[in-house]
Length: 203
Image (cartoon, rainbow, N blue to C red; front, top):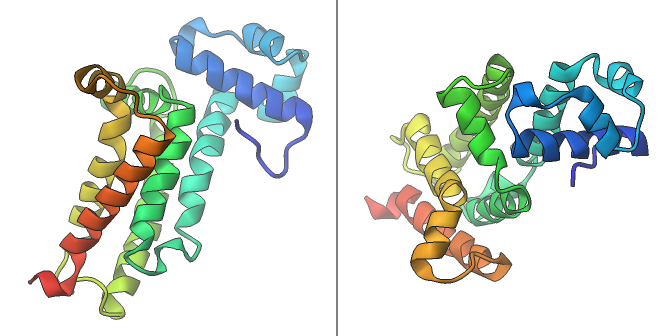
């Protein structure tokens, strides 16, 4: 559930209704009236809080990604062991809304729906913050000094996104659910795998 700290109940209901609506249907098919009805709110409240449908769409994406971006300003990634916790947070966040990674991919790769520039700005903010964390870890001797920060980011995004993007396919192949316990184990394994590849002792 989207629960921005500065929201009131109506705003929060509108954001959650928007997320449900935009994940289940194409952007142009979703109306502000439909979202308002799902949120048990007046359509005028969308204009009050977000300006218009696109503003609501962008805030819905910002609110969903905020927990992940905020980590880059906190202590979780002050050591390489934190990558396991970050992967766990990503899997938890996305498993609650499994269609969300696909929505981001559709906007960026297929240019479907609005918000391409907005999402790119959010991701660039994450890239900039992540680069600072990488440099800090290099300075403390926890990472190989010659590592390319973009390669580090690409590898991490691959480990994070692919299980969620192909979750349904993997579950059919394995004949089991990628439930919370499975994702916790996957985060622990991928965290160790990722950290081992970054460690100077591996050279």
